[in-house]
Image 1 (cartoon, one colour):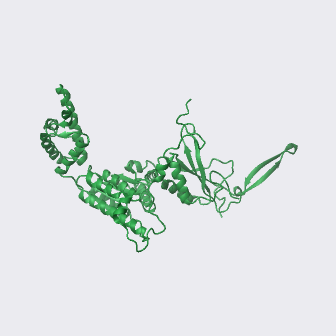
Image 2: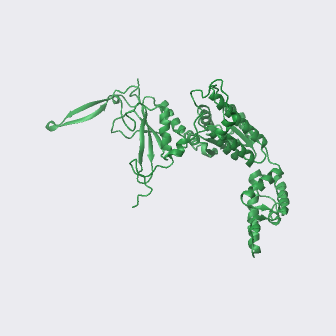
Image 3: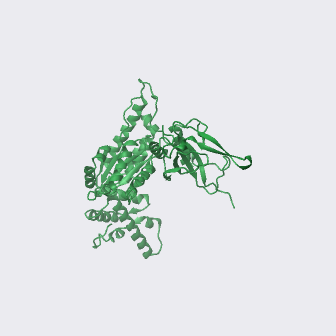
Length: 331
Length: 140
C-alpha cells in the first residue's frame, strides 16, 4: 500500500499544509499601548493604503450598478471604522461600534453581493478575523422539536464566527400566529450572541422592507441591536440594461443593436409583471437568450465565425414568451 | 496535587490568548475540536463527558473559545479539556488534547495497598475528591 498523502506521527516528513496562511489573518483592533504619541500627525492616505480598504471600496463602486444610497452608507461605515482605528492608535478608547446590519429590498437588488463586500471590508479593517460569509435561512436556525433549536442556532453562529452571518428572509424566524413556534427561541439566542460576542460575529438580516418592519415591530430587542438599516432601491430600466451588458461582457457575449432594443422592450414588459426579481431576472432572461442563440446557430448550420458565436441577435430575444404573446411564468 | 494530563500539562495554565493560538493551529490543520469535562480525573478515566457535539467546519478560534467559556460557566469546578481530532487516513486519532480549566483546589490521590494471598500486594489510586458524589467533588 502506498503511504503517499498520509500523515505520519513524527514532526518530520510531509510538510503540514495551511499553517502560515491561516495563522497570518487580520489582527483584532486591540492594541493595549497607544501606537502614537499625543501630538503625532497620522497620514490618512497611508493608513487607508495599509488597510487596502480603498481597493475594496473602489471595486464596490465599480462593479455594482446604481445603488447609490447603499454605496454612500457603506462608505460612511468604512470611514467610521477607519477613524475608529486611528483613534484607537492615539489611545482614545471608544466603544466598539455595533456593526449588525439590516438590508431591505426586493429580490435581486444585490443584498448578498453587498454583504460579501462588507465582510471583506470588515476583514481588511481588522474587525473580522476571517471575513467569510455564512448564508442561512430559517431552516438552518430553527429546529423541529423542543431542545433542537438552541444547539442548531448556536452551531450556525459558531460557524459564522470570525465572519459575517447573513440571515436571508429573517422575518420568517418569527411567526406571529403561533406563539409556540421555536423561532422565538432562535431569536433569543441570536440576540444574546449579537450582544455578547460583538467582536466575533456580525449579523446581517435581509428581506423585503415591509415584512422586515413588521418583524422589528414584534421584536423590539432586535431593532435596537441593529445600528445600520440599509434600503436597496429597485433598478430602473437603464440600470438593468447596464447590468445586462456587464453580465454579457463577463461571459464574452454581446447584443446586436436590434437586440438591445428588443431586450429593453422585454425588460420593460417583464418589470410590470409579478415575481420580477431585478438583476436575477435579467440573468435568467440572458440565459434563455443564450439557449435560443445556440439553438438558432445549430439549426442554421454551415460555417460560423467568432463574431457569430459571440453575438446575440434580436431574433433570439424576440422569441421570448413575454414578447411573442404568451403570458405567465417567471422569467 | 496538580493533575498532569494531556499536552502542556507541565506548563503553567494556558491563558485564553494561548488557548486561542493553539486552537488556530488546530483549525489550520483541519482538526475538528471538541470540549470535554469531568470531575473524576483518574488517569485511567479517559472517557470524559462531552460538552455538546464536536465542532466541525469552524472557521475562527472565537467559536471554540465561546464553547469553552460556556462549559466553564456551567462547570467551574470541573476539569475541562479540549481535544483535536486528526481524521487523515493513517492517523485517525486525537492529535492534541490539553486541559483548559481545573478546579481551584486539587486534593490529589491516595495510594491504596491491598494485601492478597501469598503476601501479594495490589496497588490502586484513589482520588480524595471522589469520596464525594459526582458533581459535588472539588466544590469549595
